[in-house]
Length: 183
Length: 183
Image (cartoon, rainbow over the protein chains, first blue to last red):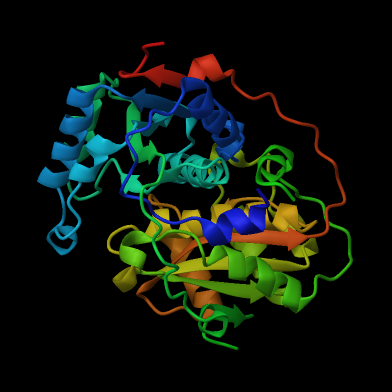
């Protein structure tokens, strides 16, 4: 798929067909994601592919339990229907104080790759700055050591919905020249 | 360009030809970047296109001044040779506590789009968690209000270097199954 089409066509997918996703297809998406840029080329990321139903349930529970009030309309239960949950985590020691950025750069690449290869995903965070219990719960559940920071949880599956295109802010609203606010 | 080729072929580019980059080409990259996912579809980002030589110099000076010790080998002076510096900033009020993630998702998309359209860029941060003076300096220079957080500075230009492919960590080192460390 052309990059431009992948970018424009990608949607956040929260409904999946029961069809399984083969390991080698997931590997090929991770293969692309690990080509993302990283601070000082530290490549500090790992991708934990969670298929076990009980673990998926626990991750959904963690997301529900620590969901901020304003996002409560978006229950995380759909996660258990994903063929896999891909948890992107970053080794603090190799991330040069850019753990979140490095993790998200890989996640963005993974999401575009998933769409380009016929799969659906949606961005979910695996931590909250104001609530360390979120990352701690994920870390404990998946056996991550203390120096590893979980960044994103990307549910993955064959889409069972076709969300309409969202209204995108007009270009002239978001582009400035030389200084903020200057058109 | 195919998405897979864009992901694999992208390099961090720090040397640019003097050739100018037309506004409508930059707009087409921002057009793609604003299709990135954002928390609660807040689309909290703006893209300030800096071409003015004095402003580019000041941004490079800020990067040099606040460069962490371990990164001092990478001087930021090359930024002044970029046709433009695209500064991605995020409105805190519209970012639902995910300012960095939202900004980086747009930046990742922008970088892939730039490569797919023949341009080069490199990821640079516009803030440091441990040094608020960095974001403050960028904000003041570009006239950003206090509720706007500068996230990334993406130099943009026609590449004048062909960096070799970097060694990528083997897939089996970064992929785990069910639990961290489990292959």
